[in-house]
Image (cartoon, rainbow over all chains, first blue to last red; front, side, top):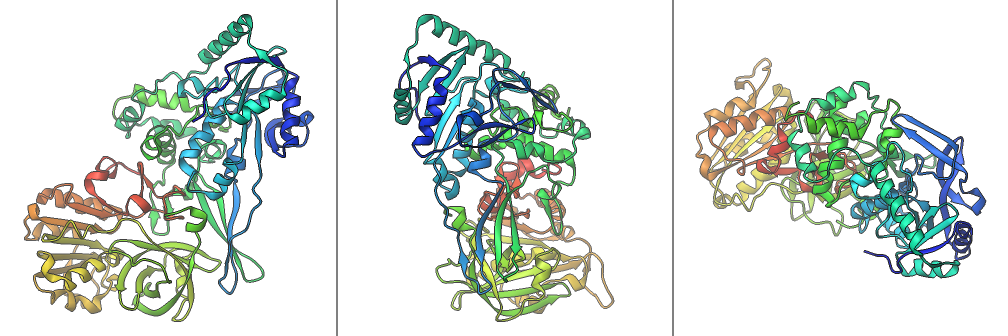
Length: 360
Length: 276
């Protein structure tokens, strides 16, 4: 685990362009947010000007819009889209039964301007996929993480509660914070230190430091979910038969948007695609526990009711994940709240379950 | 199991024989590809029909010398229905064996009660074979088996063999008798209370539809079996077999890798919860 190597430095906001260009020059595919159809989408950027600027995302349960502003958080995409693609051909079986595993070029990705919640999501995926998924691992090992600390969390954010933000504490290469036209920088790795050396920076002065701390403190207050993590897995499991799940899912459509936008949901389905030449491809595609077929077998169905599928989503993130991987599966990014077509609020679900008794 | 790009890659395997078990069930004998370890009782393999899909199928028999493994398949789903077209000499994709099977080491010297429902008998047949082969190593063997109708009974051609295993009792029942049926009628779980066995030195292995297993467990608990002496083989949707695709989760457990065979005490917190 990396930590801050440098302490805090201060530079100017326009040095972000220098940083971006330096990454491109070093051969990285830079991935950042750009505006597509009025939404922030993560994509590969060929120049700094493609990076979304002058916009702010307004998020709420079931609501997302972009207005002009100076700070944005995220859109529906998370790093998962690149590290664990929604559609990946695993291999091809020829008609003569030769199994051909595609050889893939290892790309060096640089995530630019990810928020701490998404940095945390990569740390969660590391626990699930490192040493397991060689595609993930090959990208992960060659990757640069430039993180932007979150000065103004949105209405669906709860990173403070999940201990994942609003300030990145470790596992980044370079973290920056925008304070007006000033930029506070911190390197978290040797590579980050090298990048820092490219920029015009100086050690942070007292006034900027105090402003930085105050900004982070205020941000932290804004990103709370109204429940505590301490004891949460057990408290939720004790209320495993809570009726809250049934009540909440009265307005659930079972669309699995929550699974798709979740930066840590890793479940996949396997498609066997027959091709015209007699061969067949095996493809890994994202699946989600809210999908009807998720718990279905030919002879029956283990979770025919929507509330049971939603309960699995909630308990997996906050209880089972801890047992399986030693960390929470939720990073508090709030995407599942924002992108839920009916605005079901995960924070409210957890609070309601906790308020209720064992069957309340 | 290693990285799953590799783990999900099937090996070529040849069907050496097909045996019809009932109107919608056949057993496919498959020669294990080289390098594949021999499955243990209760483990399963992923069988792949070219271009169609893959299904988890329990091992229902094993011939160690010829390395031929039996998989008993009921034609119910989009993949298993295409099994009907497969014949001797055909090639299928194979990966496995997966999962944790029946705890044969734990039951050495103990009595074993097998409770099987419908297509739940095939995963227990390797246990019967093992007891028959090493008869002195185990105590009394009691086999309780139920199916919906006499036409749904598996392996009826070898019930005589089961009965002739020394110190073994075999009871079979059907939910709905057809003409000419002279045996027991009723659900298999009803047989449990009539069994003469001392639960303190006995283990129960249960496999069948989940609802049947719940009733079986209730009867076994009433009989005095402790939760660490009841083992269940669970069924779930499985796409990977190695604990990654997520579909088989039962509470925090990945049934494919933490199971499919669980002692009841592992899962008792979740087993009774509706639609967990």
